[in-house]
Length: 309
Length: 300
Image 1 (cartoon, rainbow over the protein chains, first blue to last red):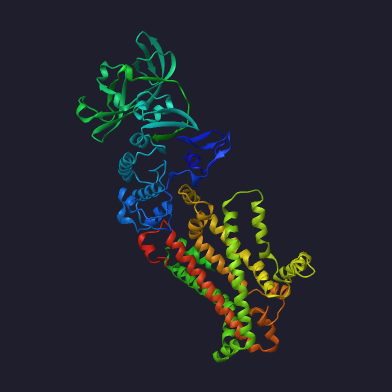
Image 2: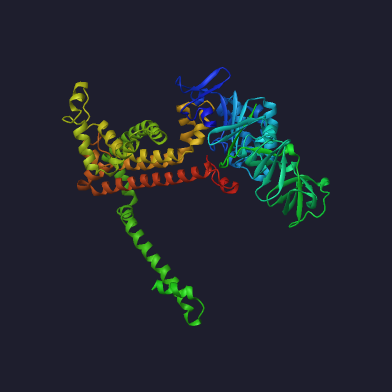
């Protein structure tokens, strides 16, 4: 999709326009070539020219030296280095500076963290988020990781086999995913069950046993989605839903508890209920308004497209 | 015998069999040494013979003779022109063939290689019936007042025809190896097709292009069959160094040998240059080498 926007591939149908400028229109036979589109395109591995120094890479776009841009992305001291000598994060910044030297009207980022290891990833992501905020440039970012999209995007479009499933703010995707696919992508617990209508919504009998109340009215076989932080631990004796603990680990100031059917994120200080250890049985409680009833959608792993504007 | 020794190694252990692996390895090393020695002797002996045929002083006399200097001038001139034409037309041609998909592309690539498998004498014959006075284009040439056969231009054509496929084939492969992403990025950075080729594709393919050009150049310097049929062997006009060797062979063997030595030195220099070029370039543009490894071969 980014390649089509950049002008590197010609779609079979559709229309691509930025502002009032039409870049592609299948019906009218318009196709503006890549070199005339003024886009800043960062491919997955950044595509730095290995035979040119950092400064020369940036000069390629604007045909003049841009020490100000190197300064702006914090790599002025690397101007004479060769791309092969740089770390993944540094390479990304060079690519960014080079794209900016083009004075683009649109920034296209393809899997910007795909080439990075897990530790560098978070750091580079935060730096990129900072730079993007100061740039104030429309940016289109494609990623398979919801975490990355959520950290960078103002709006996220979820694509499934070329179709746009949902386009919304990250919080909105978490709150009301359009289907099972989107729910799974955001990291929600997705389970199957059978719903029965009640005045306040429905009760869902889950496939592996146990009941949950939902404020959504439904009837028959359904799938439900609950975010990991919306689940609370309760006394198993008095709970309609129980599960046994597979693993417990601390992460980012909280606890991630993996059960056989659910994953729970909980704060350390709310870890009041005794005996959360592997193999023990816990009760689960969740507010009916957080139990989302979804239409079933048997799908493959999705691709995400985040749109930062 | 070496098979038996190999099995001995596998079984290992027993004292009585302990000498067998050692003996086996010794035989292997000795055998390999003999094979290498025989092959190298066969390849190098004629060259050594050429160098030792006469005193070094006579070599210089031979190269200094009029026939030889004339041939050197013809060779340098015709090869330089052919080389320049080959690079100027062959490079964009190879780039287009390597990067563009079009119907008949593989047919074109195959046709480019036909001169490679054509006997040089047949190539000369083909050139003669194509461009010669009574050939395919002879009538057109007469109208335009051009007469190619047996001129220096004919030498250039013969060299181009026989040598440039070596360059084209290598150049196509070198351009195909360039990462498409880099050319795409260059496009989004505002570079049109020509700038993408000159600033990105050619520098990145430079190692392969240089090696291919060296092979083609060496082939051109040594060109004989096509030239002698299409251009003839006239001293000072069409008689290149290899043709001079042939014509002196009867008259003055000493001079022929002297020119032969000169040609060998030139060929060896080209071979060495192409090896060094390929190696330093591959290392300096590689993105996966460690810092230490790369700093040894910084491109000058």
